[in-house]
Length: 65
Image: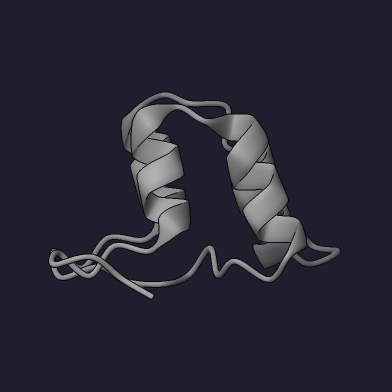
């Protein structure tokens, strides 16, 4: 499910600084690589907002970082 801008609930949580809910969404299969209409992922939004994005990045990193 996305909004009119192509943002998923995970995008919206990152934008609103709701890290606990973002973690819940990730644990339930939220896609940290989903791209909105502006071409941004939740990972990029977290980086842009200087948020603690470890939870968002963790599912996308492998053993090499």
